[in-house]
Structure formats: C-alpha cells, structure tokens
Length: 486
Image (cartoon, rainbow, N blue to C red; front, side, top):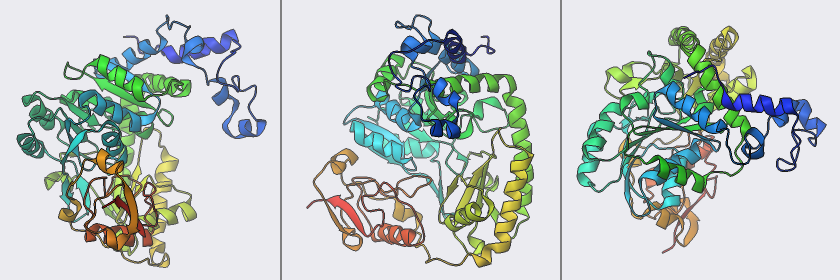
C-alpha cells in the first residue's frame, strides 16, 4: 500500500482549502467563535482542524471512505488484518474488546494486574471474571504479567471461559509471553485479547519486545498517545483471524463509543502511521541508543536501582521494554511519590508513573539530546538532595499473597448492590462495593466483590498518609470504605 498517503489529513487539508462553512457542530465554527484568550494558548490550528467526519472530512454518505482507507493503511503498517480507530482512548477500547468476546454472565480470563478501565468493563457488561494472578516480584514489590502455565491452570478450572484478556507491557515495562498465552488459548478454541496500551511502538523495530499481532494474539488494543505520536485519547483496535468477529467488534464499539469522534485524533493517528512506516525504524533506533546511555548513567548513581534484563534472567518476565526507565528509589530513604514531587518542583521534570517504591520515565522517538541530558542531570540532583526531602510515614506493603483477595460476589453485583460506608478498620471481612486504585498506574488493589483484608486496609491507609492518590475511591482519604450492606 502507498504509505505516503494520509487520507484523513488529506481530507482535512482539502476541507480547509475549499473554505467550507459548516452549519452544524462544532459550534465554534472552526475557531470563528473561539475565545481569543483560548486561541493564545492552544492555537488557531486546533479549532480549524476540529471537523466532523460526516459533511466535513467526508460527505453525508461517507462515500469517499476517508476513515476506512486510513484504517486499512494502519492495519497494513502493523501486520494486522483489520484496524479500527477509536477516539475515546483505550479505556473504552478495552471495554469494547471484552464485550466482543464475552457477554453478561459469561466467563472471561483476566489478568488481575489490569488497569481500572478493565474492572470498569467487567462491571459494565456483567462478565464473570476469572482472575489470572500475575507473577509477584517480592523483592521489587511489583507485578509482572502471568505466564502461559497460569493461563493453562485457569482454563483447566474454567473450561467454559470465552476468552482471555492479557495486559502487556505493564506500566513498568515488563512483558508477557504473548505467543505462549495465545497458544494455550487457541488450544482451548478461545481468543486472546491483549491490552497493549503501552506498546504502540512495538511493531516498528525488531529490537523491541514482541508485538501482539506478530505473536498470534487475536485482538490487540493500543494507546497511540502513550508511546506513539498521536494526541491524547488516540486508540486503535488491531484484529486478525476469525476468533473475534469484526462485525461484532464494530457493533460493540458503536454501543460504547462517541457519535462525535474527534478529527484531531483521527488526523494524528493517520499522520503517526505514515511517520512510523517511513522513519520509525531510524527514530526508534535512536531512542534505543539514547535509552542505553541513560541506563548506563543511572546504573552509576548511588541509591538508584534500575530495573533491567535481570527480571528476564530471573524468570520474572519474558521480556522488558528498554524504553521504560523504571528506578527503585527506596535506598535514598524516600518514596517514588516523593521523588516525583521533588523532580517536578525543583527540576520541572514530570515523571510518568510512580508508587511507593519507584519512578518510571519513558523515552520515545520524540526525545532528543536536551531531554536526555535533562533527565540524567535531574536524577543526579535527586540523589544529591535526597537527604533534604524529609521523611513520611512508612507504607505498610502487604505480602504478595495478601493481594490475592477472595472474590465473594461478581463485580457488577457488588458495585450495584445496596452499600454503606464504614470506617476502614470495620471494613475488614466485608465485601467491597467500589474500585480502589492507587494512581498512577491505576491498577486496583480492591475490586468490587472482593473481600477486604486487614493487610489491604493497612496498605491503603498508610499509603494515603504517605501521599498515595486513590481518586476512584468513594473516600479518597481511605478513612472510610464502601462495602455491600449486610
């Protein structure tokens, strides 16, 4: 296919060349009605490019096939049979993928280290989740993806499962054995969905971890805004084989998606695909070399412990995305949350993810010498000033087994059940009626229907005291928890 073509961008350029005047949404009329004070900050181009697909980028009947042609080019670029653009982020895309495989009351294998959007999908469609617990790394206190044997055991116990949802790479960069998990699923005649939100760059360089479509996954969801070059909320479904019906997937997406799709998202997805096909290998090659230099520099900094290929050598993960710079900071006597706050306040550096133990900075094709040196210099400064940051109350980290909570009710039933708020200590032994996710990265410690334990209460209350953010909890202070009524 001709990857020099960008159907959405070409249609947008033609729309602007014609000078069409639109008597429908958006109400700002391509910026004519925008507040000049807003234009001063975001620029006129944002509004000028905000165009509907119908009677905008395309005609009333979509006879030009603008979006369809762009999606076909995307599929060809990444080795998928079909691709579908989504403008609501992968939080919606993963819900759609789940709906396309399992319906209300049906079983779906789900990695328990899933993002809160996956738990929301379980609640929305009423699926019966069969949690496949990740491989817990006690030393680092983080979760790596489950392995094919974990999938096999789950299917042995639940042979009626309709499919599996696997999350890889994780927020910290560790990667699953996609091919192995796919083989297990396919032996049981079910599809493998991969939530590869952090993996949009993977198809474009051979030295990066395996890309889901190349590793026999049936349906892969990517967030192009995360590691790619499209604006926020840019997401793509990638599909191959016949285990997931493209017609059903499209219907489920129509059920959940917006009818006012953003042309800004479509245009940047289209442009990013062209950029990667034409220059992606060289850009990512430069990013990999840049990352190697950063990793070497971090390795020599006292008090910082870089996560590297040793997690693969130790059998904790199948691979590691080197572009994720995950650093344990506990030897500095501070938390990852404190490190993040200090770096923002003193170095104007904003870290992507952090938790009690670590920080994680991502390097992409967009980085340059300035951003490379800024990150290294800022980490040097963090090490030098760590003893001035001060201390916070310690977080009581639970043992890995304590995070495998008993599922007493289906998440949907618990979420919509009659509920009450009780003091956190009194919630021990009760069934959660809410999702509680330290953010970022947004992996729930508690999902609706799970039995709350003392270890989890201690973790949440001590974590909030130390600066943990739990924005989806009914009470973000964790002083009270929402549980099902007795």
